[in-house]
Length: 179
Image (cartoon, rainbow, N blue to C red; front, side):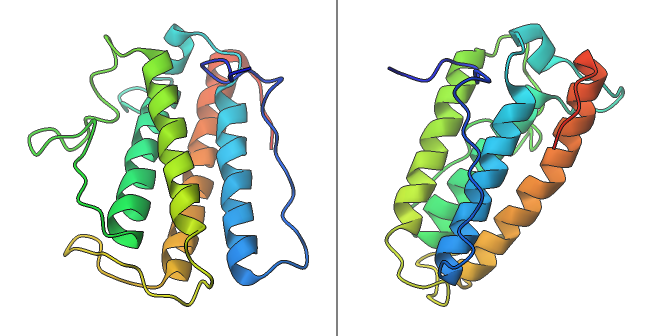
């Protein structure tokens, strides 16, 4: 059975990280926890609600955050950690905020499909490393090489910040608050 798109509250599993795992295991488990938290914040909403910009004049929306986090996952894991040559999906040199903008004709299902594909690819890449101490295989001027630890910590910060945004957006949409 495939997971409904957008997230169905009944299918989201948020698992507490292992208290005795290795550093790499714990960092990736905490990142998965934040990913599930983000999906919970979006679960059960329709396309109009996901596209709603609840705090004008900001272009921030839950669907925009899903697109942004897709780009974040893609660039940090595929490009920086694994050394793949990847392009933006939603942004362009002329529209650096394309992930948050241009939502009117966006398919919610396509956004979630892409987000989940990027998360799956990030998990696959992470599993190829034995230690958080290992250096990344790629990097650029914008995202210089580092250790896997640095990237995972950065992604934890990114998700924590955006989950806070998602919490405020969700509350403005339907009053629901949560963890």
